[in-house]
Length: 67
Image (cartoon, rainbow, N blue to C red; front, side, top):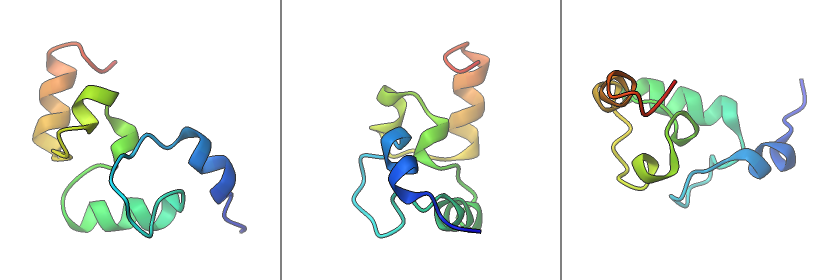
């Protein structure tokens, strides 16, 4: 399977500079090990907090900010 990094970068809302940007499989694996979700799961304002925790995501869903 070929990585579609250039296509992924067009949709990536992550504001943190890192070597995994646009390489979704590496990004997801990294965040899963840290018990987090990648930036693309969060709206822009929530992503900017760098709180990628499962709890933050659940709170946003409960508040109706993520559907």
